[in-house]
Image 1 (cartoon, rainbow, N blue to C red):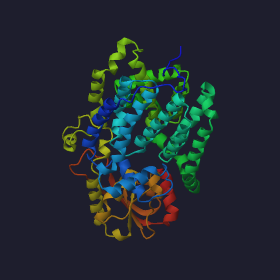
Image 2: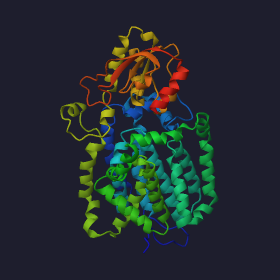
Image 3: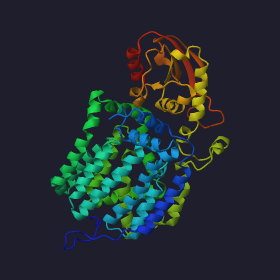
Image 4: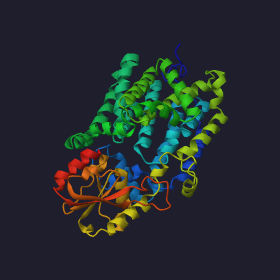
Amino acid sequence: MGVTTTPATTATGIRPVAPVARIPVALVTGLMAVPLLLTANRYGYFGDELYFLAAGRHLAWGYVDQPPLLPLLARIMDELGHSPFVLRIPALLVMLGGVVFTALIARELGGGAKAQTLAAATFAVATNFLAGGHYLATSTVDPFLWTVLLWLLVRWLRTRADGLLVWAGVVTAVALYTKFLVGGFWLAAGVALLVCGPRELLRRPALWAGAAIAVVALVPTLLWQAAHGWPQLGMGAAISQEVGGTWGGRLTFLPTALLTAGLPVGAVLLGYGLWRLLRSRELRFLGWTTLVLTVVFLAVNGRFYYVAGMYPLCWAVAAVALERREPARWWRWIATWPGYALAVILVVPVALPIWPQSWLTEHPALPAPVFAFAEIGWPEGTRSVADAFARLPGREHTAVVTETYWAASALDRYGRDLGLPEPASGNRGYATLAVPAEGATDVLFVGQDPRPLLGHFTELRPIGQVDTGGTKPSYFDGVPLWLATGRTEPWPALWPELVNTHT
C-alpha cells in the first residue's frame, strides 16, 4: 500500500499545506543556536579550518582536494575578524538554516505544526549537524545545500511550479563549488526517476535550464582541474585509505552514519522515514536515490557523511507520519520530549566542546568531540617548531616541510610572526599551495615518517619533537622534528617525489 504524503489536489492544481509553524521552529532554531554560540570560540581552529585559511591565501578556481568555495569563504571571514568565532559564523548560519528547511520540507509533505517541529528538532539534535555548526567545513555546507535542493524538489512535486527547478540548478551550482558529490545525487536521482517516476520531471525544460546553469558555472573549476591533471580524481584512493583502509571504512560506514544521525531520535526516524519514502508513489525515487548513494559511497569506501544531505528528507517524512499517528505505538515515545531530551544528553557532549580545555587535560575520560584534539595546541606547537628553527645554524637556507596538511596549515597561520618561512607539505591539497624556495638546501621536517627524504639529502637526523606544553590533548604534541641537510637535486625534481609519497 502506498503512502499519501500530501492532501488531495485542489481545483487549482496545487495541493494546500498547513501554515509555517514559525514560533515552534524558531524556538528549536534558537535552542540549537545557544550552545553553538557559546562554544564557537572554544578551543581553537580545527585542522581543516586552518587548511581552508591557508588555501584562502592562495585563491584559485580549484584545489587538489576540493572546489574553491570553502577557501574563498574562509578568506572572506578571516578578513572580517581573525578568530574561530568569526570563521564559524557561516557554519552556524547554514546549520540553523538546515533546521528551518527541514521543517519546510515537512510542510510541503502535508505536515502541520507538530510535524514541522519534530522534523526541525530531529535535525537540531543530530550529532552530525550539531557538530557541523561548530566547524567551517565542506561536510557542514554541503548537506545544507542538499537540504535546500530537496525542499525545492519536494515543493515542485506539490506545486509543479517550474521556476523551482531553475533555482534547483542554482543551488546545485553552489553545491558543486563546495563538493562534487551533488553530481552523484543527480545521477542517482535521474536513474531513479526513469525507473520509478514521476518521469514528467525529466521532461520539464526548466530542469534542463537549471542543469545548464550548473554546468556553465562549473566550467572555471573544471578547467583548473584539467590544467592540473584532474587531481580530484586521485583523492578517492587517498580518502579511502584515511577512513580505514580497504575494509575498515566500509565496516564502520553504516554504524557511524546511524550514530551521527543522532541517538535515539535521529537514527530511528531516519530508518523509518526511508521506509516511508520507498512506499510513497511520488517520492519513491528519492528513497531509491538515498539507497543508491549509500551503496555507492559504501562501495568506494567514502566517508559516512557523504549521504547526510538526504537525512532531512527522511526525518520530514517520518515526522509527517508521526503527526498522523501512523507508526506503531510502542516506539512512538521516541519522538516525544523525553526522547529528544535523551538525544540532547547523549549528543551535546560528543558534538560540541562544552568542557573547558583544562578539564580534558585533567580528566581524559570526559566525553569530548572526536576532533577536539585537532583544535587544541596549534599555537603552542608552532612556537615549539619556531624555537627549534631558530636554533638551526643554517636557518636562512632551511625550508620547513610537514608530513600533514594540518601541521603545514597551523605553521602557516601562527608561524609568520615567529620567524618561520612559509611551510610546504606534499599532503593532500597543500601540495600545490607552496613549494620550498630553490635556495633552501636544508629541510626542517615536521612529521612521524621522514623516509621520503632519504636519498635526496646527504644527512637526516632527529632534532626533537613538538611540545605543546600543558595544552593537551593535542594532535600536534609529540610530533618528531627532523633536520635534512645537503639537498642533492633541484626542488623541481625533488618536490614531485614528496607529493607522490604523501598524497
